Length: 160
Picture 1 (cartoon, helix red, strand yellow):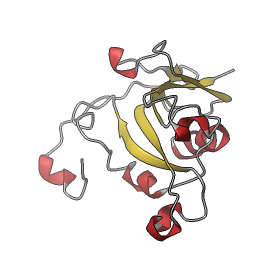
Picture 2 (cartoon, rainbow, N blue to C red):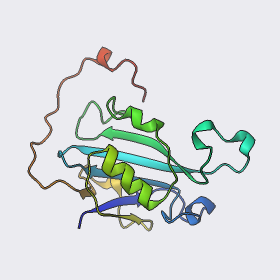
Picture 3 (cartoon, rainbow, N blue to C red):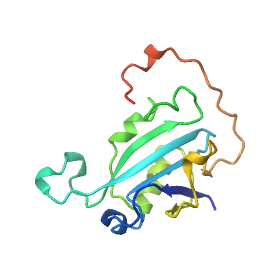
Picture 4 (cartoon, rainbow, N blue to C red):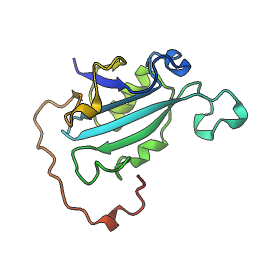
């Protein structure tokens, strides 16, 4: 069984944390996908009580997932940004914040094949304690990513 592991990076006692099965209002991970690429992902939970101030992207949802960061962390030049150019469009995707939807998002949008999801809220897991992925769904049969040199002007239009 391949488990998608997240560090609970928010406040587990927040109302938004308690309201969902995710158990934390802010989660983050570094994972290795099926192709062997290492991706950093951070997701926030948003809840808007006043319909007049609810943004369009959150309408119709109670607790909305908001992609705060998603980038390839196996690339030195990309690792300094909040979003990789190829992954930036994923920040426009919002869904009800729950374990099933997060697992579905990761599997479908990040080329993964995880079976279940676990969130650690008590410091058992720390994403920033290592550059290694917290979880891996690859079968180990991949060619490691080889970093390339990038001309900074090629990154125009990508916002950190």
